Image (tube, rainbow, N blue to C red; front, top):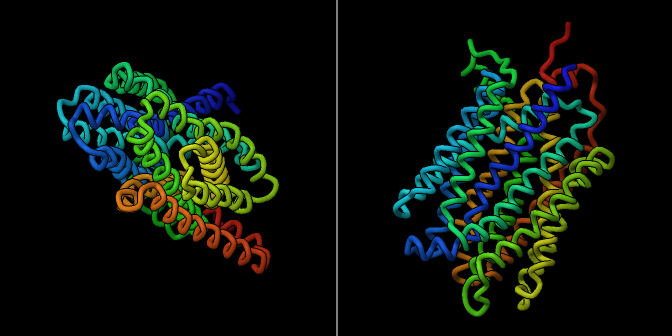
Length: 404
């Protein structure tokens, strides 16, 4: 085994895992600044998240599957280049329409980059250690979210456009590195391989269930962060962008601890069982946000939110990769597409509850959604207990292998 290639690939994987959510979250603490700069209201800024995430989710469907066909290195470099172009055009946007279009381009690049990086992780890490490796991946994703909101507030106070220039330079540097990665694939049958892998992953019960639970978790996570940040920046709180960024980033920094811990637990007590602990934390998050003194309890809300989200995503990511070893790129794409669709639609789904019932409206909808996620996990784990043991033949079929 060539450990130099694996270590380089691992560093590249974690760097890409950081960069995607960093770009997605960086605008959240900038909301008040960007609203004033472009002379728009909160609905337009919420759209800047949705228009990043919808192309992200769309490209996520194909990114991992295409990397199965054309090779991880080539597809990863393509995603990074597109991400860099979107970042650069965002920095020089003359109006809100150009900014939103740039966010869509940026999201396309991130949607190709992220599932390919996750599939690369599955290639270089043995199954028995995949939970812990996914813990590291979750740390990188969560760090991107945390530093995105933290640095978004800092850049907003200085020069918001410079944040996008920094992201452009980082993406181009990683693209050059990714071109040196091995790019083994089946390009002669690229589209066929990609499409078949995606259909296979969509039909896999474990991958689909993991994605649906991730969808719910991301609706809650992005909804709480987005509208709590907006409310804190307005009367009666009037918090500065820097302070909002610091407060929101708590959830990300808690995830840095929760990632390795949940990876360790998932390898020992079970992945869906570990995810259920994360769902319980999101239930507590929603209940706390519904209280009248929610603003004073924001540090606690962010701790629960960060712990809950990461403790869901880490084990379910590992479970989806293990569910289809022969098509990890496709499994990564389907899992990521479904969960990040929650990120894309969360601000729009929760906009009406927020504008009509303030943050308490967000809390009530989030509570109902997390209770539904808990019910899905409990139902699945019970069904697995009643299921007869798998034969060797069934295991081979699941793995995509053939009997001699």
